[in-house]
Length: 375
Length: 121
Image (cartoon, rainbow over all chains, first blue to last red; front, side, top):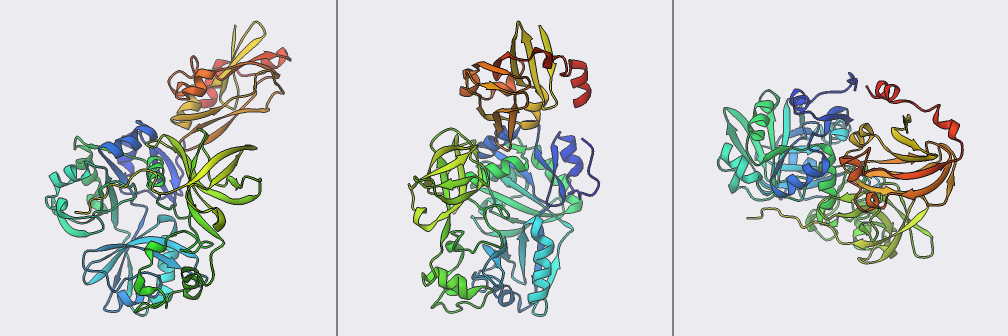
């Protein structure tokens, strides 16, 4: 296949090619969608041992200055100021209508906030932050940092062998570490539902670290294909599919991401873009018409994104936003939006697949139990 | 017996007026692990290039086209039960369906092995 020269490469590009990856364009980068082992084997390896993912396409940035936490809080329905040092939290950038501009992870690093955003959104996110809070804090992109994820029940064994002390981290905390002189910032988190780590490393040391991780007996390289099937089984949203500027956090069933202190009656209630609408939806004053739900097909037919969902009478009640045959659960699973009346667990619905009605039921997520290390 | 190929990465083996159809090694490699197939209806007649089924991996779905006009006489129930046969033995146990040719001349126009190899090279 001819190489698309308009694509950016991550610092691991040469390693991906050497490992025999099939490369695809993703978020403006040439990224490995799968290695020779294949999606299914890579998915199962991550659930049973440890998988190494190159997620260097994602955006890393710092928010620096005494006003950074208050400023960042003004962009999200999330408690930023109350987050302890080296603690990590999930956040949502909202537009003035309460639609989701991006979902992200951030860590309180003491003298600054460290933020990781989606690759496809990073330029827009940085412009949004510069425009809205650029006066209150410095928005500092970190294009020189690569990001590796090591995920799976044996990730801790492999990583602790190289970086002693990482085993002490618990889920959604982070710490600064060193490996062969390279400064790492490691969080115990990820996008697979498994225990695991995300490692921020300077681009000049990323390949050496990746090679050393791959030399550990537990570790295999994992592509974006398995990353997608792993996150869907874990019930985690993919920005652009399951959430976007047209969905609010309440429609997206992300209420858990909005802490009490920012809700009506909270000490720092509101004050974020779209707050009137989002809080009214949360309070029930303006109930949402549709909600994101999990779905399991009752026949062995994969139900993919954009598939129409119907009720028993054949009326359209929604649409699938992500769907595939889950390799671990071994059933077709999906996420989608349905009218609130059909959002209760176990509600029977039908997916219209190539003109045939495939029975599904609304299902709790995650589809596969999460196995985070909570200490 | 004649072995031919299509631009849709299907193979067709013709023997005594009956064609067996499957997807090529190149096609299964491009799709990845096959997890689902939808096969045509036995007894139904299709025109050349009609959609006759679907083959899906975890990451992608592709239509399966009828490479020649005719009536479906048999579908591979083993493949329906174990779609991975399309990966492990695409030209053998992973066949999709058999068709009784209604326009045998259509076969001549299809690619031979050398032409198909050149296409996927």
